[in-house]
Amino acid sequence: MPDKVIIVEYDKNGERRVSTLEVPNKEDEAKMLGSILSADEKGGLGDLSARIPNFEEFIANIVASQKLLKHTMPEQDPQVRATNFDEVALGYTPELAIAEARRCLNCKNPMCRNGCPVSVRIPEFIAKVAEGDFEAAYEIITSTNALPAVCGRVCPQERQCESRCVRGVKGEAVGIGRLERFVADWHMAQQNKPEPVAPASNGHRIAVIGSGPAGLTCAGDLRKMGYDVTVFEAFHKPGGVLVYGIPQFRLPKEIVAAEIENLKAMGVKIVTNAIIGKSITIDELFEEGYQAVFIGSGAGLPQFLHIPGENLLGVYSANELLTRVNLMKAYRDDYDTPIKRFNKVAVVGAGNVAMDAARVAKRLGASEVHIVYRRSRSEMPARLEEVEHAEAEGITFDMLNNPTAILGDENGHVIGLECIRQELGEPDEKGRRSPKPVEGSKWVMDVDTVIIAIGTSPNPLIRSTTPGLTTTRKGGIDADEMAHTEKVAVFAGGDAVTGSATVIMAMGAGKNAAYWIDEYIRRTYPD
Picture 1 (tube, helix red, strand yellow):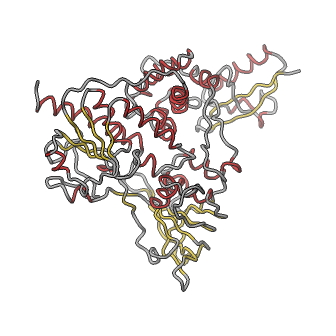
Picture 2 (cartoon, one colour):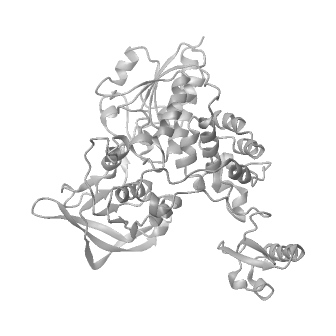
Picture 3 (cartoon, helix red, strand yellow):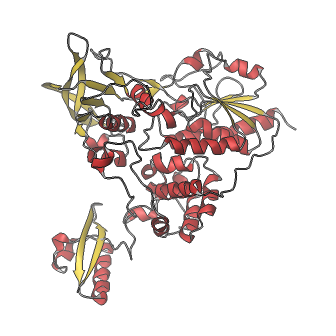
């Protein structure tokens, strides 16, 4: 019988072709592959149709010999997962992880590491995975990244480390995030893993405000340097946006808890139910003996549309919905957290938070869930993976629509979302096309719930209770590239400075702040 060869190739426009080609024997397979690669080097695949039978079915994947595609991540079936809160992506097996790691080219000048905000030594850990030495890989990752199991799940690798991967030039980048997740999960599953080492104290005390990705990263790095670090968290559980913002099906809370336990085992202290600016002020922290303070309190204040009807019953901010579900477990029958049971839902926005809110609404029983976005699909800020997962789970995307009012009945309940259709104008100076309303195109979407997910900003409590802090035009704390604020010994980073961004960018800001806090302490309190 003839062999089947799957080939993956990319034309000169970057479009991927994938198909199956039958060849009589291995010799013919080698000849066919040679002609394909030769044609590709000359600038495209156009002349191959005359020489390859069934060219319309042709597309390449020589996964075995050319290794152009990532190994597929096992997932729950979309129809099944849309009814539960279990994790969607199931993770690589050891065999898949080793096979994926062996796709790495071990470049002499690895660009992937330059794309990582926390400078993970990517080629080094991947080489250890390829060898099957998963513990060594874990040690390499955690030398710079305190939250590998988190990053492997929610970091937008396709825009960072994987976007620099040489493999991506003629195929798909190495699955760096998938491998990082595998290594972290493998380590957590071991019964006899080494305990984290608590470094000896250097006698200096640092306060960290917020236990989200920026705060935890800053605390972990400072603790490794020997500082006595206390993290102050406003909620009853540590983790910040990792526990209240990201759903269980994307980031299991048991994973976050395990990462935090590692930090506590290193000696990081965490105080919950501590609202800085109300329970205690930053100036009072200094009075208690802390020598520097890092503000990593995030951006938890939701933004709204400022259109008629936002006060109707059935209107949520994505923050409120996700906090009720993620932190307060409203989706579980053994918790008393109240939550509305939805029927027809509109989610306004198209970022990762909007995708999370839409997918949560679907899992809570909504019969219809719509993403309403004023721009087109190509402008959506959400990760492609999250968009694809949402579509597979039955979420409807209503592009080029802008809400103008939320409609209610005589009892104040939502009964519809009035929208006006949009068209994209000319690109601005940043290359982004601005939406413009189409005259006479208003229409009403039949919904009983509207979830607003158009962004967040930093809570003003800390800046309003801390003399000496200055703020940016958008309400973030003013901090320079070295994380210094205008107040002496107070540093800031992450979403509290920039506004809502990604987990990994917040972690990078926390790592940067730890470095400069150490510099400040060494300069101010020389031994």
